[in-house]
Amino acid sequence: MHTLATVAVSSDQVPPSARTNVPSVLFVDQSGQLGGAEFSLMPLAATWGARREVLLLSDGPFRARLESLGVPVSLACEASVSGIRKDTLRLKWLGALPGIVRQVRAIARHAESFDVLFLNTQKALVLGALGKPLHRKRIVWYLHDVMSCEHFGPLQRLVVRWLTRYAVDHVIANSRASADALVALAHCAPEDVPVVHNGIDLEAFNSRHIFDIGALRRRLGLPENAYLAGLFGRLAPWKGQHIALEALARVADLHLVLVGSAMFGEDDYEKALHEQAARLGVEDRLIFAGFRDDMPAWMKAVDVILHTSTEPEPFGRVIVEGMAAGRPVIASAAGGVTEIVSHGRNGWLVQPANPVALAEAIETVRRAPEMAQDVANRARDDAAQRFSVDTYLNRMTSAIAGCAARAHDA
Ligand code: UDP
Image (cartoon, rainbow, N blue to C red; front, side, top):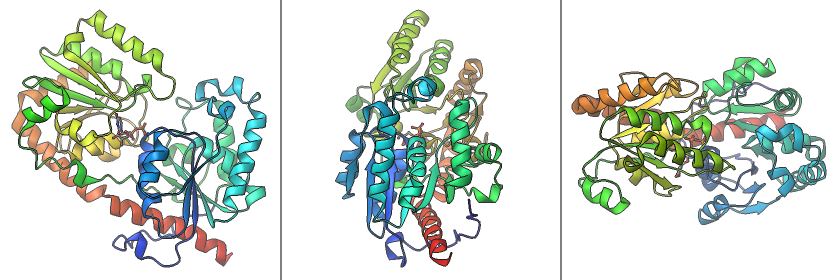
């Protein structure tokens, strides 16, 4: 792996489309669903200043979103490979071997006419990098995961370590937390894993123009006069919705809306959340909103935004979105979150998986609305300064173009 430290991130002011020498890129993503990695790929693929295509390894709403942005999309789906999940990896990969070989070949074939192969997810990394002897393209991997043993099994960590060392040309991490875990795993130099935080469409989340919160809540079917917390993100045990439910039971008259759905087979967890709500007697103060396309509206409609991940969050787009929406954010103090939120300055940090601490933080914010709004205003300014889409695009473009340029120099 070569260092990206020499790739300048100083040209933040140059729009990607105005750059010269932008390489053609095949972006590969394993998911047809809309998660953080996919949302971060959208503006990059949409504004890329040279020929580009997105190759998806599963079909789903992500494809339509990309196509609506004018991005050419192709599919290379293999049900046996899509069925492999982190927790079933050991059992399933052998049976999926023929599908794996077909996907490795398909990616390599697609990559032939591009300068750079940009791998945006774990499976894309494995399948794209394994095919390097076939396509011989420069590989950029955008790392969206904390590669710790809490998140990934030993086999997957071994494969990633090997590929990082021998097949990937450049890694870009979505947070220092993600970068540090990879450095520890692959024993590479920290400067070899530069960090580019996601950019958020700040204008879309700007709540300055919302004057009638009551009307907004009526439109969304939310309780008009209740003190309302919102938790945004897919339903999954490590996202900690169950911790929020326990906090809900501890805070009198608090209402909670969960926005997001079980996207990767976590239906049992969703069922368990309903059962937990019944057990705690909080059903009448809890709303399951499902997956929503209009996150800015939902965020602007709540009084406080919760983030409750029980494991280190690799980045946490929802936190920056909440900050951009000008709402107070209470987040789990682990992983990339601590690079975004500084406690008491632009939000509140609480110990992960601690419902008592979460309930206390909610009470603190509710008791002092003016102080909470001051903190939220500072958060909105921080989000604008540190997490704009322009900055993100320019840094990514510099990194990818730098990677391709070194191929020519070599
Ligand atoms: N999101 C959405 N609708 C939903 C739930 C989530 O559009 O109902 C979006 C959310 O706005 C954010 C992304 O999904 O941009 C989740 O990214 P994050 O980094 O928070 O979590 P990840 O999915 O990467 O674990």
